[in-house]
Length: 164
Image (cartoon, rainbow, N blue to C red; front, side, top):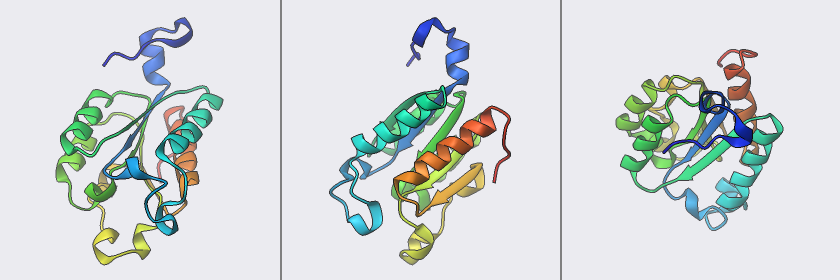
């Protein structure tokens, strides 16, 4: 997919100021999932929150969701040279070395985000195979974790912050 150039900017400029948000399995059902873990926002409302903050920061934002691991990996490959990336691989977080390997090839700052605090949930959720290949992890802050991640990866991409 070719990113369309807003306001007449060159494609290379857009690419540098593009943050891609990738939501994994079952996140399409936000608003229906247990509110104590995932909150009450729908995916559309969450994407609007993220996109509005990106625009406030002067960045373009593309948000995608899939329940298919291969599609998720294809998006990582396609956008590996974007300005920044935010991923919530959902359950894939805990076992997908294919997503781990794809994220190793990403050239921009990457944040791993989880709406719930995976460290306090079931034992199997406490291990992430994604964490070793991302720049930062934010877990348990609900939708505001995405906003924090966005601000931090944008700052990293602009050279105003370090990973961590």
